[in-house]
Image (cartoon, helix red, strand yellow):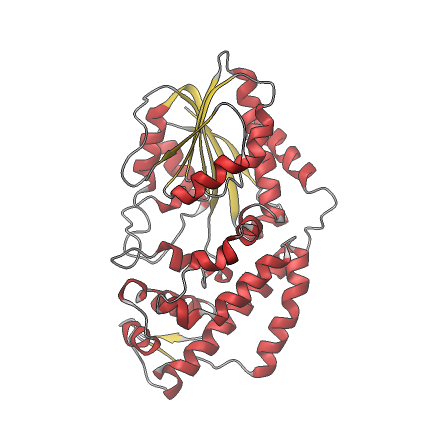
Length: 372
């Protein structure tokens, strides 16, 4: 990998200096198990699975009172429970043998959550989100509570900030991403033109902007699908070169072929129906030597099962997928699939972090930087 990969890794390690990472894998497993046991307990208590026999996921969704757009989610949960040995599955796709977690087992998982949270550098808000989402499963499935209400309780961004910025892996990745931007700024002989897609609460933006201090910037276009995030960003950031625009990556991108120096997409490119086509369009926007900077999850962990699927549901049900995820309920591409997609769009991968032997890989989030 390139020297930039080494420098970005050092920047990320500096950002988390003093944080122990040796117990990362065990801590991730503890949090995953808490969510799996909580879902299993809820399904056993409220559906026909408690009575034995083999049952279709749609029948389970009916038992749960899921609204049409969320009816795919119980099947998604059952697939995860099967993967982790908590439910059986037959050749026709029916599920059976759901094991009811014992009360002591649930209590132990809850007790281990706090030490796991601390080991991963997760703020208390993240643990609260996991427990609250488990309690709200019935209301979430009935669309009586939206996942946004969980991420922004009382309209405050603290929980969302904890999810997307205030934790060990986000600090590492954002610091590494800022180093990629500093390197690009040092190589470009004109004011930078930057586009950020799906910028959300600006969790990555907040770490990228300081890397631009004292450097010429023509514009930094902050975009999102929601006016809520644009308004919040206007209040949060005051750089004179920032511009704001509504943008849906599934429908359109700015029409500036060959003009951009950097396109940033942090924890959002997986929302594209076809990632390869999105990357083709991004590559066309980049000037020669321009870069795309991605932060992506490369495996769905059970700890996100009670929140992420609800955010992904469309009016017609599960999200539309036409790439390697077609025909599955997978949310994310794997690392190897991202690398292949970037290279297939004519982009040279210069940064791929964390390193494969790094304990942080247990968190399954990565930084990719690639150059046209």
